[in-house]
Amino acid sequence: MSRTAPFHSINESREGAPRYHTDDTCNQALQIPEQDLRPGSGGYYQCERCAAMHVQPPAEAAGLTPVP
Image (tube, rainbow, N blue to C red; front, side):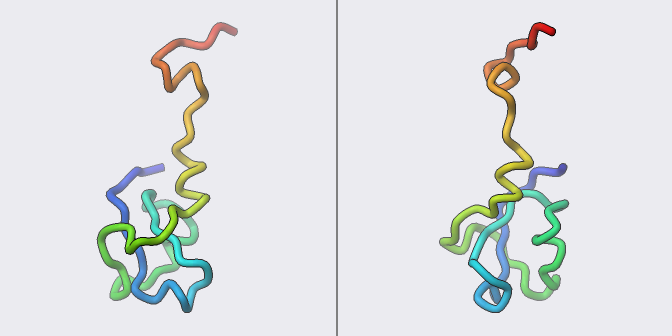
């Protein structure tokens, strides 16, 4: 997973629910033609897949080491 600055497609309405992406390995983001890519969120909600790729377990988010 590769976290990036937010980006979106100028043709989101054509591609389904408008979403912005924050991971350049997201399957949905990879389907956006290069000429349609724009920086920023475009005022859209974040892609659920991108958000899920960067969720940390609570212990890691707090900087703690989980005990096995």
